[in-house]
Image (tube, rainbow, N blue to C red; front, side, top):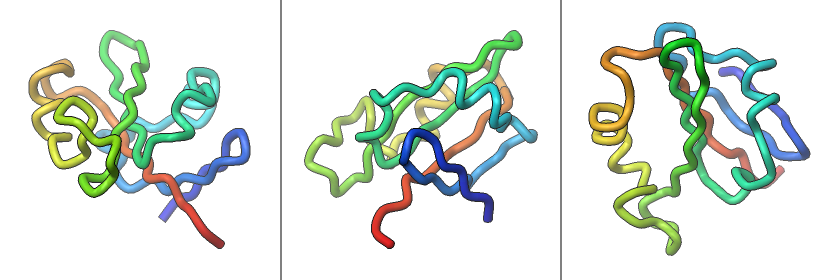
Length: 94
């Protein structure tokens, strides 16, 4: 398990497909906009990192477009074929 802390938010790196996670690249793209999400997914295509926030299915803010349950569909429909990507899960509590 790898943990990352950025702007007083702690995340666990739960998937690092094709070694897509780069801490410097992530922190340069991260804004407080993402602090509300349960997950942050980063995908890399053509050398560019794109971040997207997702919620747990049980979160009242979850919709089809940002429900973690549909992550595979997002990766298939919206990301380059077999691209590098990573998934960070927000760590709450102590």
